[in-house]
Image 1 (tube, each protein chain N blue to C red):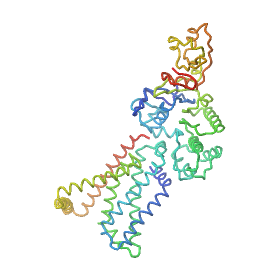
Image 2: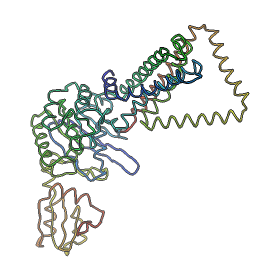
Image 3: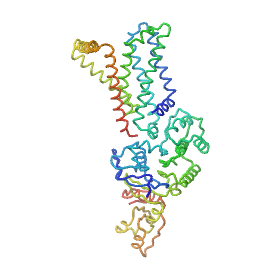
Image 4: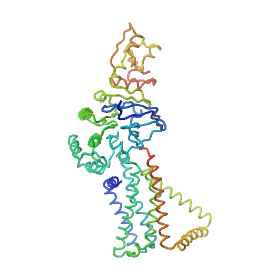
Length: 226
Length: 297
């Protein structure tokens, strides 16, 4: 697996750096130049989403050059390639997140301080967004390559429109009620289990989601014909 | 027979294409030419051996191992040149080689550098600046630098100039002479296979026409030339493919003696068929389309 990670890192190094600079730049603009910055948790979630897309875009480069067949012709199991992509994606997203949080909080005139971003709330939000985004995105990319990103984006847009339609039909108050009940459910669960156990439980759920995503990805990638 | 590669009843169906019951074996230490018209299934077969494409049914064994289940172990001992060699275009050739090479347990960096020099490859240059021929040479250098026991070459000579092509064929013969390597070589250029192949496997429309030693192919097939008046319905059955023109017909037969007996006393000429003749005539069977100045059956 390390050989595959090393290969992906070497072969995609430049574009990874470029994407990191661009994504971080966008977040710096939001954190420093906007007259009114978004709430810390919202900023953390946005940063998490961007960092989740960072490795995804990198992985699709192989597709751009039609080099997937080359990678799969090497003496390595496809399952290992998928595992390497997951490890690399999670690792890159986390590194990108920590780096961005540090940069943003250390910049003069930034709306956020180190203590704001490296607090439990924003961190949990960012990590949750990263885990969910990667879990949903990677199976699409590994099955459909570059088109997978487009399929994912279109699918989420369609889903969003459907949800909005449902919300407008059902009425706004009801929508708020449903969201409120979900939030209340989490709060109650937290009260029942205690903060530490709740965090552990949430981490386990996210880990399970990533594992499920890995299993699906491995399955679809093994059946992918090149 | 000590087969390094064995396919048994391999089938694969795509929309508009059907590879049906393909079986053949490549003995250890020989070169097998895989020939056939475009769309015959040559590339699909090579991809199936590398497990890039899964057969719908059938069995592919390489070095006695299942090509799908033990794919990684199999591929460690295989060198390949894809029809369209693709790499990470933006990187220098040496960077790609040093990144991909270590995946192979027997990778020999010095051997690769020597081969690249021999093949005239500027390793500092980015791969996007390489021509198709240079990419093929690069792939070939990669394939040869890890002591592969089986080389899978999908149209390796396309895009290569005649001088280099002949050099490559000479090198393949030398590799085989070492006794440790076997080659499956798909090509449209039957002249290449005339030079180096020990076995010929002919695919047409996803069907296996034959898999024979080259000598058997050349012994089995012959060209019969004669006047159009000889081309009766009964005589047509003797031929695998016929081209007719204003000066008579040329036909391919798989049974020279039978053709001689049937046409005894008639003015016919029987010539040795080349591999190209076999592909040309067999490939046109049943189509009946116009060909140059003649018709084919």
